[in-house]
Amino acid sequence: MAEMNFGGVIETVVTSKEFPVEKAREVLKNETIAVIGYGIQGPGQACNLRDNGFNVIVGQREGKTYEKAKADGWVPGETLFSIEEAVQKGTFICMLLSDAGQIAVWPKIKQYLTPGKTLYYSHGFAINWQDRTGVVPPKDIDVVMVAPKGSGTSLRTMFREGRGINCSYAVYQDVSGHAEEKTLAIGIGIGSGYLFKTTFQREATSDLTGERGSLMGAMEGLFEAQYEVLREHGHSPSEAFNETVEEMTQSLMPLFGEKGMDWMYANCSTTAQRGALDWAPRFREAIKPVMEWLYLSVKSGNEAQIAIDSNSKPDYREKLNAELEAMRNKEMWKAGVTVRTLRPENN
Image (cartoon, rainbow, N blue to C red):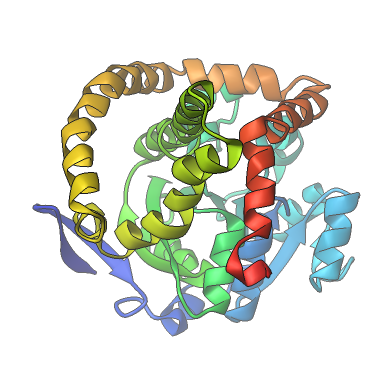
């Protein structure tokens, strides 16, 4: 483990230098890692673990996703099983179904979580809000988490490129006395860049806040507001989209992603710098009350309950697809389709 300075705050992080993959394999050498769910996180984590030399099986109900697992080389009856069978066979159970999926299967699988097994999550939702989800793990097993700060697709892509994605980790129950070591081992096994310690409560709360805030919800809202103002004042779709989305994603985000916001500012015109420095505090003051409102809604469990109620409805998928289609059909994102075809790499 190494101590690192994060903006003046010292935190302990773990990388593959301190915890090499060879050590991770030794820690988990007697474990059968059962990846339950092959949707968002499942493929990346299962394939990375397999490529790193761990003993891995997959549990997935039959259907399109089951066929995807087969296409990725998982063999029915050997390394690919039903969810219930995989939980029975596994000793290290990775619950990578959706939050709604975890709630639905819990009554069917909890009987197979026998003493000595480890229950692993990549999100603290089900455990943190167990009064709402009903997911209460047995007291005689380890319960741990490694939460990649990105999609399963990114986890897999970066692994193939020889890079790792940042992950948080937590221990909820340590029955064996070795839960933290096992957590770090599987974190290295799935391809973590570095691991930082958290709790199930903090991870669940920050995750729901982030995705509703700057990562997804606030970003879409900001884009829509600026695009609409430009269009309402007579600017063309191409101009509005370029000034709202294209320049941000293609030019500016790589700069502050690489070296920070000040570096991005320093590489823009002095006019842009002055305006951004003046207006950033105004946006912060306008948005911070909304972010506080959001955080309290998450912490109280209100957002979790909304998700549970919505995602458990039989027509959830149809309604979700309709909402995503409505977003796709907004003029801003239809303009984006054309703008992307005009990028140099597409010509």
